[in-house]
Length: 199
Image 1: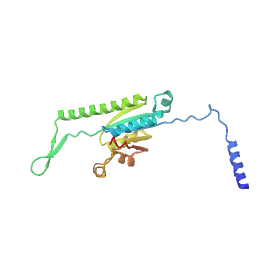
Image 2: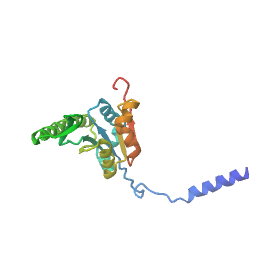
Image 3: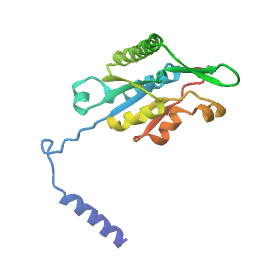
Image 4: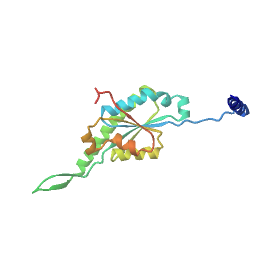
């Protein structure tokens, strides 16, 4: 009992010795919340974006307070590399590489750019409806690697990706972007699983 009273007395004296601060003297804390949502053409990626908007809008609003604190949402889409050749079986027992014409390559690039623009436009409309501070980013390459590189270069605080719910066999062969990012991204990652009716 004497020990309890001594401990209580020490805690009280420790609290009393702390200097008092007024609001003007209090240190200012800048909260930088930079979130990134990776999207593709799947419904699950747009579900993940909507989930972020619904749950983190107070950190990402375009109000003066939010802008002063630095809340920002980056919506990223990764286009696959456009290959300059196509391999298909031709001749006796082997695959032959055939180089695509420059007009075909340009046509593929243009189609990819249009698809990316449409996806990002849809994402921006969702964000603007809730007045979310948003920037967009289009990258080219392997989605898994490019997302992780962007996270590191942009100092992202939270990466959000959707989960397509690939089966075990498909995931083993083609890999899962969300699984790869969970193991390789330089920040916390949130994998948003959609309701069963979206899968």
